Image (cartoon, rainbow, N blue to C red; front, top):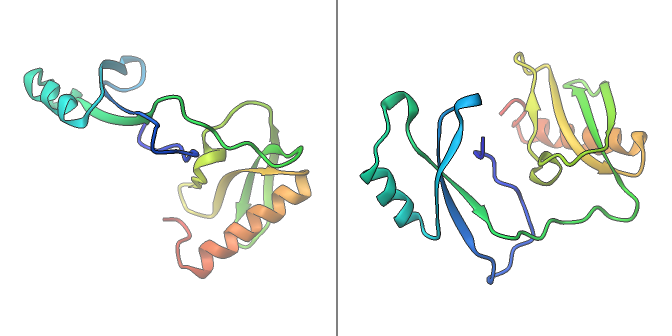
Amino acid sequence: MGADKLIIIADKNMKQIFVVTSGIYSDYGISAVFSTRELAEEFIKDFPRQSYDEHIIEEYLLDPKLPQPKGNRQGFFVQMSKSGNCEFIRKENSFQEEFFTGKISYFHDHSSMNIYVFADDEQHAIKIANEKRGELIAMDKWGI
């Protein structure tokens, strides 16, 4: 949790915060929040955890300005095979961080990619996913 950064429209006046967390799944929690990385690191040094449950510093911008989709675009989840076949598509009605990060995930065997996109309709979403698929293959980054 928190390992992937949300891509946002930032300006020099935005404040970054440093959240010290520990645990996983139902044991995950916030230990403390700091205004500087140095204070977060000092907290971790002063209050060490057991090795299996170490503190992690997560960075966030305070009051971020999220980009807005163009026009009336909607969110779609697209699953596409390496050969370019759309294996699954659905309209997303809830916020997904992946819309803004551009993060792509893969099936365990890297046969298909999963991507969230803003598009006018399903065909447009498939087109966007296919362009990204081609880009990844051309740059030899499929599955990375």
